[in-house]
Image (cartoon, rainbow, N blue to C red; front, side, top):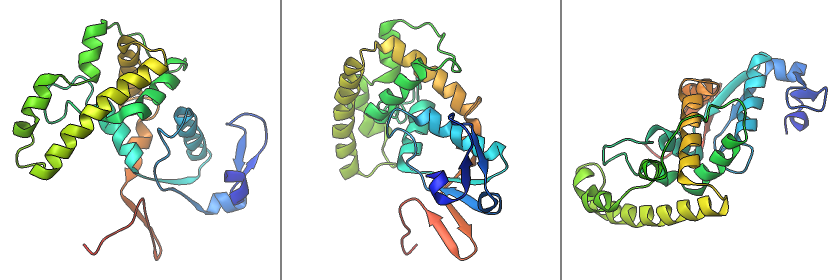
Length: 216
């Protein structure tokens, strides 16, 4: 895609074997979101974007639904506050796909030691959460959305477990990978990406957004 845009030239077989063309040097690369969690190459995507930055490209990153979902899923791992505890499992099968990538990546620390039950409690929510979510979300989530969210989280729990089984992963393996990924995204290799995310980007008279604007 970069080569077809005329902004990048490929000079070798590997991802890092690229250079900016004159057009790429004077232009702006705007990424409109939903680049993560859409397949088995999220880490590769992040590293290619970093390569562009290292070459001096003007890279602008907008937050899409998938980036926000992954960010919140990682941020919420192991949190005890009821209003946040469900955000990890809300990452669903997309989070499991990212976890699979991490387990095969030598650059991400997956050395944490967790028991299976401890890991399960970190990734899923229990019966108490479903009972108390209406209380925890009072004044934050409208009643009609609260019912829908409870139903959605039940579905997400099932989806998450099925995705783990399909990937032949234990909860301990998944939680260990998720913790390593959180460190990489918040204070490590990919921190720059999430720190640079914006909701919109204005370039001249062009407003770039992920999914549109309303009259507000």
